[in-house]
Length: 351
Ligand SMILES: Cc1cc2nc3c(=O)[nH]c(=O)nc-3n(C[C@H](O)[C@H](O)[C@H](O)COP(=O)(O)O)c2cc1C
Image (cartoon, rainbow, N blue to C red; front, side, top):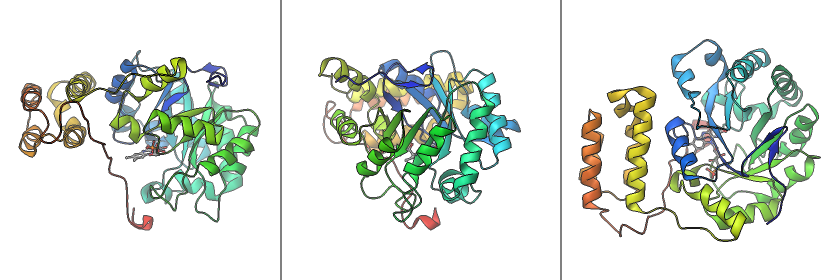
């Protein structure tokens, strides 16, 4: 494959395979795990409330925590007030982040009812003005991540992408679903292609439902996009970026890790959480993630429950060792099952 390397303005990314933000999952410890496995072009933080950031909320600041091996890093901000969004972007640029991503895709009510996230796609002039103000506020590349539009009757992403390019946005990431679709149905690659065709020269990143090298190849081929960002597929298989980088270079790639490799990653991720939060404060922080991993790995319920009940780091490591000894309840150590992440479901008016 020979498409040109991916750059956000002057920022040349090491690969075209990017980690999509997944609130609650793509925190610093997870990003470090993925980066160490190789192949990642850029990671983005979970969405960060711009107002809370400039007000100095400790919880929000923790979402932007980073370290030297967590590079290049984009921080994703959300908000509806151009002044606040610009100030947050300036603050982050001063702290050395590589680029700013504006969230225009989040479908959940908590975010859209404040006029941010996907609802920005319902107000054209104001939204373009907001984005332009953020672009002007910082010397680093600004990107926008959006959905195809609010619903099938309002596929506004192509027109927005063109307008954003004209006000200086460095790249667009596009999740090929509408807000009304939530996470249901399949990704509309045709819709992504329309965004690719709408812009003149900035890169477009295709996103949605990529879980394998074959899916990524199809995304590139059918949409003409310049890079691919992967969210849930990376949680299920953190080796995917390395596989994609190997495939792009050689046409072949190594298999993903197995049960024991996954447990090693889990322990390493927990050590990074300890570094981030200090000692036993890591335990409550990691519960949700550990539960998700162990359930997906078909660890027997009794051991999963034991893991949920630990209070200290030593207890945590001891349970993981027990799990390693026992192996999965179903299947073998070499065949990892498909791993599913919970997504908001049902009528999205209730999210
Ligand atoms: C649990 C969860 C949290 C998410 N959080 C964010 C977020 O903070 N910002 C954002 O732009 N998109 C967020 N998304 C959307 C993903 O980045 C991505 O666009 C979507 O999941 C489709 O890509 P995938 O199929 O590769 O996961 C989230 C999705 C899920 C499932």
